[in-house]
Image (cartoon, rainbow, N blue to C red; front, side, top):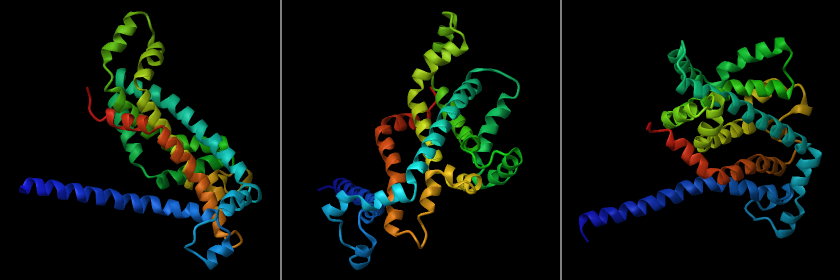
Length: 282
């Protein structure tokens, strides 16, 4: 074998080993979390490394405990309301804003484009304190609509940035031809821009949903005083106490993780296209 052939074989072997290693360290914690979520705590203490039996899996005792006794079903509904509303409102404003930043000429356009990037770079903890003060004075703390508005402050900049990059790859000639044919700007956005940008919009929607579904800091600041409107992240946090079995905490963690995994696998194609197609203009 030539030296080039030997190096190629070595690189292939190292690539397989690397993929297997990262897959193991990524998937094994989730696998073990699922295993622990099906086992009673006393049996986990006696045999920590044992796998759950079929009777334990079929009984779903830990999941029934967190669902009924820890009120997890209410937290899931609250998280669905917040995440869905955040996605819809953010997409509405970000599509219009990204289109304006890409296609329209107006005073302050350069400052607007730079502002999108600068706000995107601010960490959440920097915005948390002023938002907390403002919403406390307005009396919007402790409500799901108030939390949705807070999430808009953190999701709009990144949504505008991602969609603006993708809109730049859409030929302007298509929209100009539609305007000549009699469509107005909103007709062009609805009939031309949105269908062509569907992969990017789907990627942004998934990204926003993941943020709103898993977010903890803002939910803790704005909803802590009213447990009846807690989101799922706060609901799972209450399971991490001495009074609640750790297997219930594992079950709650599975509940908050599995929906995102399912949505990600179904939307993987759109996510890949949306994140890569806007990387090169033209």
